[in-house]
Amino acid sequence: MEASIKQTPFGKLSSGAAIDLYTLTNASGMEARIATYGGIVVSLKVPDARGKLGDVVLGFDSLAEYEAGHPYFGAIIGRYGNRIAKGQFKLEGKPVQVTAAHGGHSLHGGKDGFDKKVWKATAAAAQDGAARLELHYVSADGEEGFPGALDCTVTYTLTEKNALDISYRATTDKATVVNLTNHSYFNLAGAGSGPILDHLLELKCQQYTDTDADLIPTGILAAVEGTPLDFREPVAVGKRIDQAGVPALVYGKGYDHNFVVQGPSGSLRLAARVTEPTSGRVMECLTTEPGIQLYTMNGDGPAISGKGGLKYERRGALCLETQHFPDSPNHAEFPSTVLRPGETYGSRTVYQFSVQR
View 1: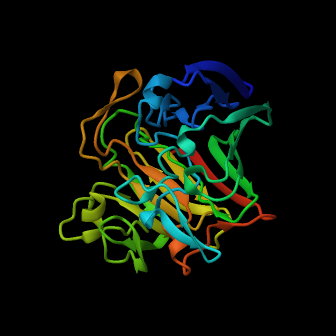
View 2: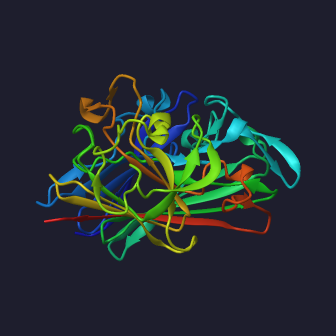
């Protein structure tokens, strides 16, 4: 089988903008479908231990369902992933106010972040058993309050070794802050198959960023040792998720924490490994980023009706969002998210799939 990439219409937004869906297939049959709306990973079909393909990311069948609103299923997140306290920070000594629409704080780039933008797609010729899609978007100076025109390129590569490789690049004409990521919700047993509490999770992280009740970092890097946030050895996600008397779990209603990835930031290294015992699927997350946000879909609302009419229940997926730390513009002690003219922002994350037999 040869790698391929196919473009099909995905419908039109209420604005009239036409959206395309690109299907990337590698030489072994793994498949990723990516929309030009939000750069959304609509589906990701991965083989299990018996070789059967199954869709492991949550999402919808139609563009209209995405436009109606969703919890960032599969989307590119920017200009700043995660939270900025009160949407305020100082940049080169000047105060900046960005959109604060989530409990009084900025979250995932504001009201109309990159997850709601139309990206221009360029499909590269499939080669070496891989398929590649390049998405481009220019965020205007002042969009959501962020200074500078930010020229962004996100490249999805479905490799011959069953990995979804995501690279990010950006330049600016004014000093700004940048923190890009992808917000896919993973269930390795198959999207809509129930809770992910039996998934075994390992994080290559000795610390996490302590937060207040609004999940805004206090500035303290807390040790995971002796806490239910210790995933240095594989542990079932649900084993300690509701452990009583732990403020961090109360604030997040479960896991919603940024962990500090071991090893030098900027180098591609293993950050997380997830194993699903029934299917045998294994996902490793490698990144150049200093942090990774573990989110276990803790919302208290009703189940979401997803692809094929399947129900996405509370804790029906987990996210592993690679990133710089939340609220970094307000913490000089955190790795900087500032990008200036003449500099290039670069980041890479790889979701590598295999099986455990």
